[in-house]
Every structure is written in structure tokens, then in C-alpha cells.
Length: 74
Image (tube, rainbow, N blue to C red; front, side, top):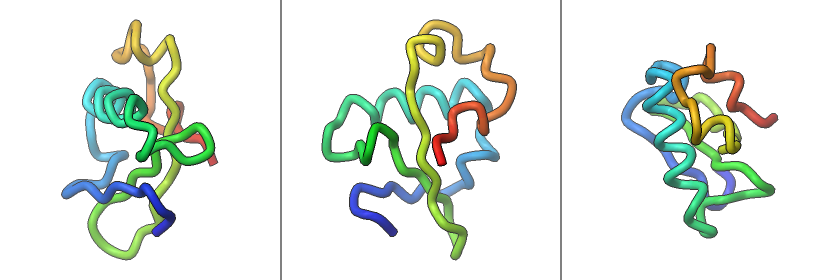
């Protein structure tokens, strides 16, 4: 995994939009966990981690994110 990646006990895309937004935005406040503007999260197993971004929209209305992929930055 890239430096700064965080592995969760569940796949990030299996979390609710609000839960994923909360994790991403909380981790985004820690410079050590931000890689090229995104937070890199993965779940258990051999799946590669993905980058997620925290935007002002995500902070203001996380429930409006219709899918966790809306947070993804590839």
C-alpha cells in the first residue's frame, strides 16, 4: 500500500455515505494521512486502497453524497 494508507476492518464502499464522509474528512485533517490531496483508504483483503477527497459539500451535507464513489479521487 502507498505510504499513509489506512486499512479499515470493512470495505470503505460498504459504509454509509455519512460514515465514509466522516472518516474521510476526519483523516483529511491529519497531514500524515493525506497523499496528493486525498485520503487513501482500503479494507481487508487484497483489494487495492483508493483515494477519497473531503470537499466543503461533503462536510456540509454528507448525506447528499449519493454513492461513496462520489468521494473517490482516482
